[in-house]
Structure formats: structure tokens, C-alpha cells
Image (tube, rainbow, N blue to C red; front, side, top):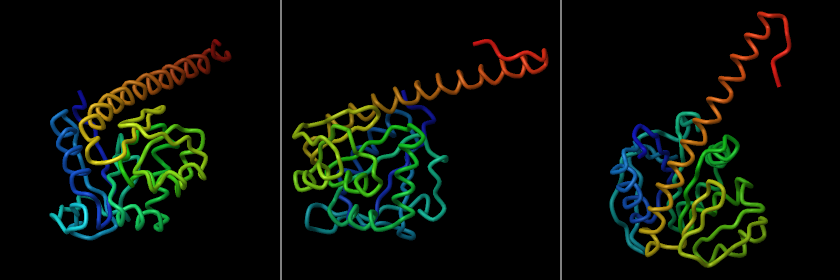
Length: 207
């Protein structure tokens, strides 16, 4: 379903391991290529609640990452992880670029914290870990307490227990996003072809 799709997984030290590992596994099984993007060099540290868990290899350093390299974005949670990312202008700009390009984004638990800093939640319905409710509402979002919420390419969930529903909706929305971009790309290519033909005829393109 997602064959060949490149997924950026943006994390800093302190991410909740299950919220990276389980969605990543689901994406890999759906045919996507998942790449960890991080400001941390070498390996980034996961956590299981209040305890250190495993380290994961960083595939793309944040300072070399460009949203144009990827089709979609996954933002795991964990308190320390987004709290660091939202202080980094490069990370905030990286996240915002996905929204500017109309690319799907999935965020779980504390992951939406970075969305607040990127100023991309105003007018959207979203869920998260409950402690983010006030920040998201202050940023203009409509916060709800649901297992999973899908709002125009943005998938959000509250906590690790929501991961099965999060994964299902994430994969579905990522697939829809690919189709929508393919249609838009085809339409743009068609418009360019019509314009070129019209230029050769010295006529304006048909409307």
C-alpha cells in the first residue's frame, strides 16, 4: 500500500519507544521506507515511561534533512523529545514544511507539542496526551479526548494504548495523501503541457 513511500520519523532523546517502534513496524510492513531524523548524532535514546529503553540509529541528521526528501512525517511522543525539538528552529521549520506542502503528518501523545511551535494547528481538530490540551487550545486547535483523530491529513492519538487505532488510520491517511499528491502532480503536468502547446500556437491556454 505504501511501497516506496519515504517516512521521516523526527525524534530527539527521550521519545517514548513504543510510539516509534510500533508505528515504524506497521509502516515497514506496509512497504514504506522509514528513516529516523534527529538532532542527535549517531544514536538517539528511547524511553519506556520513566526508564531508559533502547537506542536507535539515526538515519538522517536533522541539519542535513529536507522535507522535500520525504513523503510523510511521523512524530512520536515522550515528554523530553518534543520539548527539545520545539526549541530548535531547524526542527520547527522541518515540521512546518510538511504542512506547507500538504503532506500527511501523524503525531501521538506529546508529539503534537512541536506542532504548536510550528503554528500549524489553528482551526484543526486534534487529540494528544491530556497535559497538552491547554497549549493546543491556546494555539487555536479544537482539542478532543478520542482514541484517534483524522483532520485533513493530520492523524493524532493520545497514548501508547491508542497505537493500534493510530497505526490503522496513519497508514490509511498516508495512502490517501500519496494518491492526492499524484493527482495534483498530474494536474500540474497537464497544465504545463497545455500551456506549452498554447505557447507554440501563440494562443492562451484553454480554460
